[in-house]
Image (tube, rainbow, N blue to C red):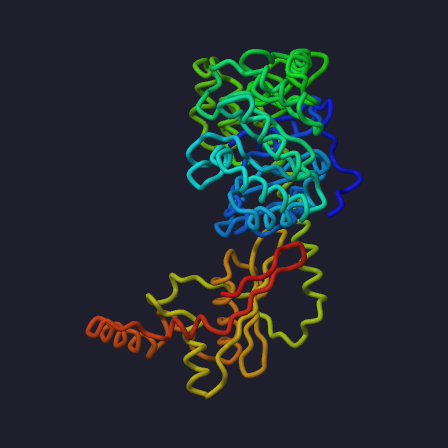
Length: 488
C-alpha cells in the first residue's frame, strides 16, 4: 500500500516516548506545546482495542475509542492528528492490522511495541518477548506496512550482542518500516543501568532507515540541549524521551524548561478540558512532583479523590468550575439541537411517549418486556422486535419496538440498551392499555407464573425459556460516527 505523501518524517525529531499511564492525551498535547515534534501514545493491547467502538465526542472535540464497559481506551483530537503515533501491544499480524485499520484515519503513524520487558506485555508474547521471534516480527511489520497507508515503526531493546541486534534491525528494515526506535538497554536491564550508546551508534551506521535513540534520561537528558548531545553520541536520526519528559515535559523547550509549578498547572488544564480520569491525572502529577510529594501540596494531591480536589490542591478551583460549566453548557446545547432534529425527523409512524423504566416499581424478575412478550403470545402476534440506536454525543440509547406492525418508543434516552428496550415496551403497553407488571397492578398473573416456574426450576434443575425468548429478535444500530453494530 502507498504511504501517505504527508506522512511523518523521523529525522532530526524530538519525540515523546510511549509510556504506560503517562502518554495519555493531556501529556501528549503538553509535549507538543513545549516543542516535541512527534508524540507516541501509551501501549494499548490489540485485543482490548478490537473490542472498542469509535465515537466522535462533540462536547470535548475528540475521537474516543470506547470499550464495552464505557471506559475510554484511547482519546485523540485534531491538534495532534498529524503528530501522534499509536503504539500497540500485539503478537499477531492479523490482529495488529485490524487495530491499525481501526485507528489509522485518526493518527499519524502506527508503532509496535517490541521492547517492553514488563510481564503484562511479555506474558502474551508481546513486547520484549517478540525479540526472540524474528520471523513473527517480520510477519507483523510486513502485514502492517502492506496493509495501511500510514507509516509503521517499531520500538525494540538491544539483544545480548551487538551483532545480533544489528542483524535483527536489518531484518526489520527489510519489512519497509519508516523508522526503528532503539532503547539502548537489554531487556533485563533497568533505568539505573548505563545506556549502551555504542550499540545504538553501531545500528545507526549499519542501516539506512531512521534510528530513534531512546534511554538517555538517566545519563544524559535534563534539558533540550542534552537531547542534541544524546543524538550526537548515538549518531541517531532522532531522539525519543521518556522519563525526563514524564518528570517535566517542558524538556522539549529549546529555550529551556519551565518552572515545574507552571508545567503542572498547564497539564491540569488539559486534563480538565479533555475530561481525563482523575486517577490518571493524579498519577502523572505525582511523577512530576517526585521528591516534593511530602510537602503540603504533595499531600493534598495524594489525598485527592476527584478532579475537583486535584484542582483545589493546585489553587485552580475557579478554572475547574468555569471549564466544567462551559462543557455542561455545550453538552446541553448539543442535546437540544439533537432533540430538535429528532422531533423533525421522518418517524411519524412511531408512537412516542416520555417514559422511563424504574425497576424498583416492579416485582423481582418481572419487566415490561416480559409482559409485552406474554401478551403477544396470547394474541398470537409475532414476538416484539427491538431496534436500538446509540447517540454518539453522550452514548445514551433509544429503542423502538415493533408490535403488530406498529412502532413505539420513549422520547427519553437511557444509559443502556436494556433500559431503552424496557422503556419502549412501556410505551407500547400504555398505548394499548395493557398491564406493565408493576407492584400496584391487580392480579399480576406474571408474578404467579414466575413463582410457579421458579419452583419448577428448583425441583427439576431446568432453565426456563422465557428470558431466552425475550432476548430474541433484537437489532442494534449505531448513529453516524460509531462502529459497526453488534447484535444482542
